[in-house]
Image (cartoon, rainbow, N blue to C red; front, side, top):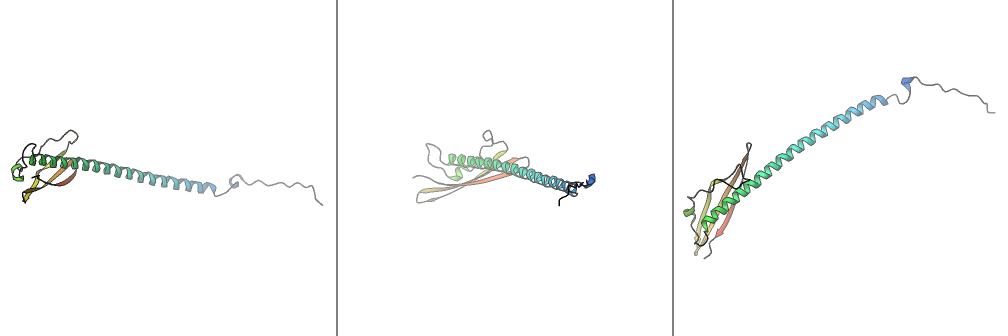
Length: 154
């Protein structure tokens, strides 16, 4: 019933072995992966540049805020001298703020004049002091404005 006949399996030609389309698709996949990785790399570089710019603006803004705060503190020190009664804004508005700020504030300044207004109500003087700090670095400029209200103690 069963014959012991051996069958010979014919070999395919060399270029027909395996999947005929596998070599072409590997090239397409490789090109696709290279393009996708290039786009991801370019996006990452753009995000890093944007992040660095944001850090610069944040540092400049913080320094400008501190410069404005220095202006307010300076003006309040002139309005309320230690051991003396409170003065009127008109008495201290002629005194310019300091030009040189502490180390670390290079490129920053207190925008002059510091605005000061006051009014009296029932023997109490109310003050509004507004100071602007500005920092410049390589053509980039940032400024912050601080307004403080104070009153004399009678």
